[in-house]
Image (cartoon, rainbow, N blue to C red; front, side, top):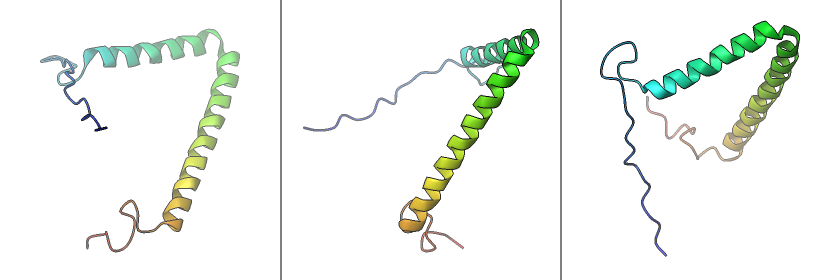
Length: 91
């Protein structure tokens, strides 16, 4: 069974001019909408937002530390993989 080649013909519509020139307007507006919703939520319910965002920050920080720990451990156990060895570095 052969593996199909990856689908790479994705067309992303970008703004030709204006503030969003060269960027996808849909993605930019979606991210701005999410940020506005977070700010309004924090203004309307500050105590709830404080506790929830603090716990989210704690969870994300711990997750990042676990990822970095396992990455460093992998690189130390297998130094020749991933371009991290001294032989793969260019002067």
